Amino acid sequence: MQTFIKAQGASFFAWLVDTAVMILFVEIVRLPYTVSSVSGNIAGAVTHFAIGRGWVFNSDKAIVYQIIRYGLVWIGYVFLTTFLVFVFTDHLKVNYLVSKVTASVLTSVVYTYPMQKYFVFK
Image (cartoon, rainbow, N blue to C red; front, side, top):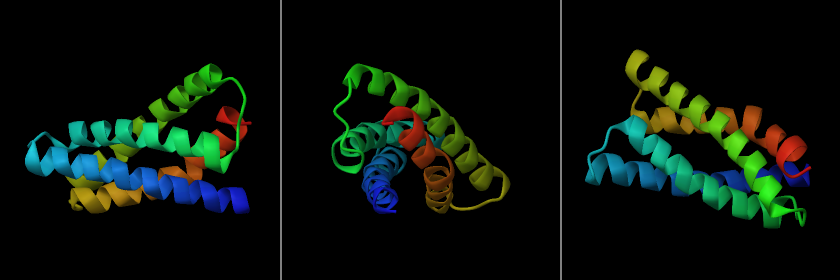
């Protein structure tokens, strides 16, 4: 349970980075929210990998293989969150930030944590 709680803390911090980048790109740079969401995901992924590897899973295995595995998981995460943000925002008419929070929480618990625990940092 301690690892799960640490993983959710790392996810929350990475989500803050992700969301800050998304808001910056939507509100200041004026990029579409889908492009901004992916850009935020990239920033969050780098943050999340570093925290996950060092603090959450205390992994000292070969970093190259973990980066490759993390990249594969991240591609799935980006697809899932971007798709959910699009569905919630365009089809259900939910504010893009509420959509982002909802999509991020769902994918973090159901997809990202299990994939990192059993595939990336095993």
